[in-house]
Each structure stands twice: as structure tokens, then as C-alpha cells.
Image (tube, rainbow, N blue to C red):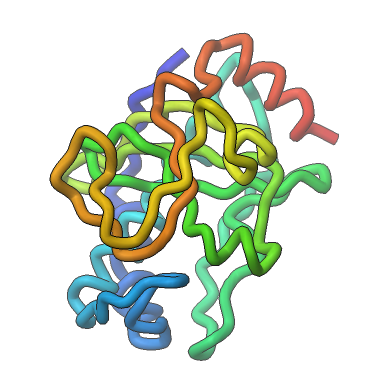
Length: 196
């Protein structure tokens, strides 16, 4: 089973175009964040996120997972309106968390949790430097990431991500990659839930 997924040039261009257009309707700060992102930064963040969705779609479609019927949302919404979920299948909502290629943490902004914006599964994918693919690092069940436990930390705004010099712009629930589900058996079990 392949965990390092490449996307096509057509998919790359579609994600890039989406990021360039949709970034203009997005807010400059993250949920609970104070940093005001400029337009180029929003474009990069949006591009990374959409590439992550395509990577996960291609990953789930491969054997032995064989999850079909995944439709990604490339619609442009007005400011203040977002898509409801990254991927929904068989009534199950997946959130794709796309991070830089060197990351080790699945991060979820705590303000989203407080607002009740939670999903059934959170998937971490590290996007290649050239944005032409990514490595799937695993997933967490909803309660594993939204409820503080020994493997999920509540990280505060201004603190550095543990083991890094990267300062957090907002409060986050964080789970390190080694505590994610990422065996073939884990993925097959999830894939079976996603099929009708």
C-alpha cells in the first residue's frame, strides 16, 4: 500500500487555481489566531490544504482500500462561508490536515472544537516541498484529538510546538504522528466504514 502519493499536473493546476481565486474571500487570521496573513500566505496555506485533499482522495481510492465516489469541493464561497467538510462518505466526515513536509504533529485549532466544528476522523498528510504530492502519516478518531488525553496535548497560543521553534498562532489540540493510526489494517477498517 502506497503512503507517498503523487498528484497529476492537472490536479496540481486545479488546486493552484483554486487557491489563487478562493484566497481572496478568506479571512486573514485563523480560528483564534492573531497573525494577520497577507494574500500570498493565504494562497500558500489554501494551496497546501487542497493538495492534501487530493492526496487523500487518491490514497483512499487505491487497493486495498478501494473507496470510490469521493467528490472534493472546489467551489468558491463568499467571505465568511466555508465548505462543510473536506470529505463526507457514508455519513462520515473526514477532516484533512495538510502540513509542511517536515511536520510531526496533527494540529486542530481549539476554537473550532469550542464552536462544535468537529469531524469523525482527522487525517494528517505532509505536503511535498513542490506541492506535487504528500505522505500520509495517519489518522485520529474524533475523541482522540478533541479530548485531552496522554497522547493529545492542549497547546497554547504563543507556545512552540513541542520539539520545534515554531510558535503557535492560536490554541491547538495537538497529537504527534506516532500516536496516529497508520497501519494497513487501520486504513482498511476505516475504508470499510466509508463504503455504503
